[in-house]
Image (cartoon, rainbow, N blue to C red; front, side, top):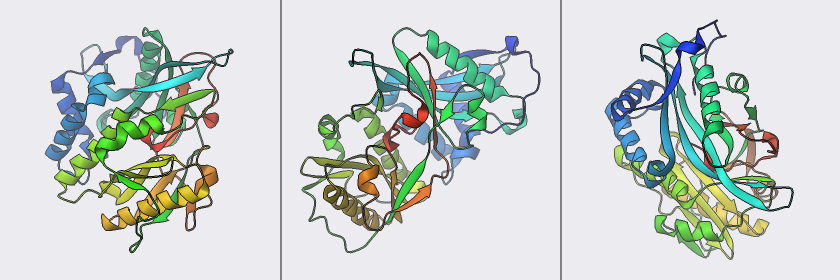
Length: 332
C-alpha cells in the first residue's frame, strides 16, 4: 500500500479513472516490483502477476484501475476483486451481494506527495457505488496504517495474530485427513457460515487463488510446497497456504467445533509447516475463532504488522468495521 505526504491543492476535475490495458498492467507490474516484488526478479514478478490474473477467480472479478490526468499520464493505480458478502435485513433474511476488495494501491515515488492515491480511492468508491447490482462495501488491508484511507471514508478493525512455532516430530494422527487442492470446494461447502449482520465470505475459487500464489512461488523460488493445504477432524476443518516470502504457513479458514478439534488441526498445521521448512503457523484473530485459538497450547498473541483490515460502506445499514470478521482468506 502506498503512503503519501499531506495533500496539496490540485485541479481534481482534470483527472479521471480508467481501466488498464494489458500493456498498462505490464508496465505497472514492473513499477510496483519495488514495493511487492522481493525476492523475485522484475521479470519473475511480472510472470507471477500474469499467472494470478489468469486464475479463474481473477478472470471473474478482478480489475486494474488507473488515475489519469488530462494528458493520460498514470498518476496512481490499484486493483479490485469481487468478494461475496451477505447483509442481513430487518426481516432477518441475509441478501447476497458483492463487496470489492482493493489491493496494490500504488503511486510512483516521483509522483508522491500530491494526494493522488487518496483521489483515486475517492473516485473509485463513487464508481463502485454507482455500479448496477448490490454492492455492499469496499475493503482493503493497509500496510501503511489507517490515516491515508480514513480520508476516503474507510474505518479500521483491530488486527491481531496468533503465532505457533513450526514443530518437528508432530504427527497427524489426531486428524481424520489431510487435504489436497482438489478438496477445497467440498470443504468450503461444509464450513459453517457465521450468523452475523454482515458477512464477507470467500469462495472456493478465492481459496484456490491463495494456493495458486503458493504454487507460483514454489516454482519460481524452486522450493517444495507443503504436503497438504488443510486438515479435517470430525466436522471441523482448517485450510491454509504457504507464504514462501515470509517462511510462514497462514491459516486461511478455521472452523472448529471444540477446542480439542482446534488443537488437533493446528498441531497438524505445525507439523506440515516444519516439514515444508517454514518457521511458524499464523492464525488471524477473528470473533468466530478466538475462543478456540486462545486456548491452544503455545499460541502467542501479537499485534499484526501490516494488513490492517479497513472497510468503507457502499450502502446504508452496514455494521462498524470492528464488528466485521476478516478471515485471512479475504486478504488480497
